[in-house]
Image 1 (cartoon, rainbow, N blue to C red):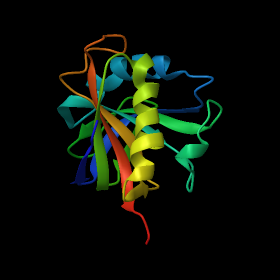
Image 2: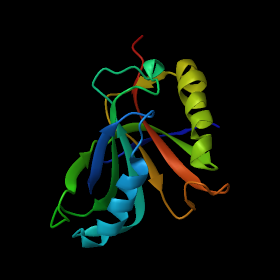
Image 3: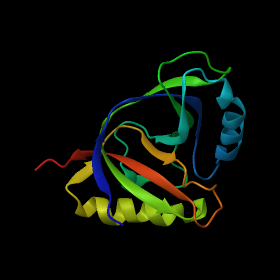
Image 4: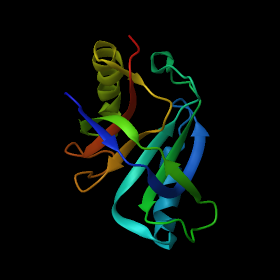
Length: 163
């Protein structure tokens, strides 16, 4: 599983966020609430959904445990910020250098993909993780969290390792 290294522009997103950890995960409830309200988001770009994880500044992914605190977001891209349901927030996703991986299979197998990225690929690469949001795009090939043929694009923010 080799990534594509790409530079993406910044994006305007609108959605919901929760703070938590893997050992107490309320992501399903956040997504259910997001799905109910997304039709009310003004200037919505049709298509892909964004699932984001935002870690504390300076956080090292090799220190990640099921008790690590971080922020999750469910969002959709907008052309410009406008009206949105109560509790929804505007968010500017920083552009820059990203590694794009494809995860295939149900969400419960995501840990295997994540382990590969952070324990195998990243240490052997010329990159390190940057302090920007990590995100997944849930597009046309995303068939739901339990579907064995589901695909999602994973974007890891990068910067070049110092020599």
